[in-house]
Structures are given as structure tokens and as C-alpha cells.
Image (tube, rainbow, N blue to C red; front, side, top):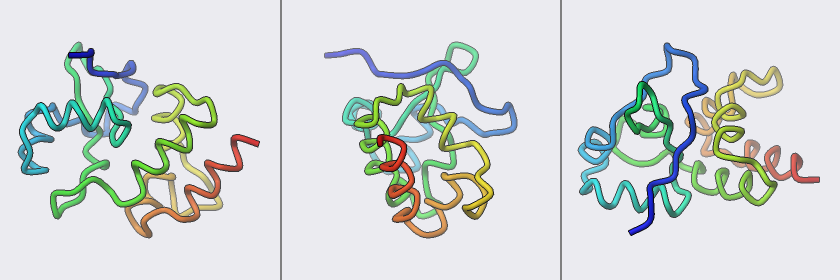
Length: 122
């Protein structure tokens, strides 16, 4: 089995990060499926204090991955972004969006966020 991809924690300390067992519980999946989602690029993990975790804002209150997040991660990866750069971009305020890209994804499912991510590749 391959290692679970992750990046250093570049998030503001106020951003909640969930451990993989907590993510698994919220998604109703075994931890192995969460690790697979990380390997498949549906989620991005950070290491906070040496512990692997996923930003809580990547999971909806209904227990699903935020609509549009996997596609946005794919577009950013195709644009050459590292996982660290993806996390920074998703959590950096953008005056032309309603807050940060992750906020726009959570609000609308992300068509505009994905369009902007695609423009970064040009």
C-alpha cells in the first residue's frame, strides 16, 4: 500500500483539522477509504503537530465531501500546484469571491472556483 499523501500544515491555527478517524466517522466510511480518497485526490491532508488530518471545511454538515472539491483539486494538480499550494490557495481570501475559494465551494459547489483554478494553469 502506498503512503498517504499529505503536506505540511500551512493553515491558520484557527482552521479546524480533523484526524482521519474523525473524517471517516463523519463520512460514514472506514479509515482505509479516507486514505484512498486522499490518494485519489478527492481530499488533501495536512500534518498538524505530526498528526495527519483533513481541514474540517472539506466535509459538509451532511457528512459528504464538499461538492466541487475533488474536481478543483484535480484542476489545481493539473496546473502544477503542490498539495501545499492547493491548501494555501483554497484558504486564502479572494475579494472577487464570497471569501476564500473553500467558502465559495461550500456555498455554490464551485463552478466559478474551478474556472478560476483553470485560469491559473494558463
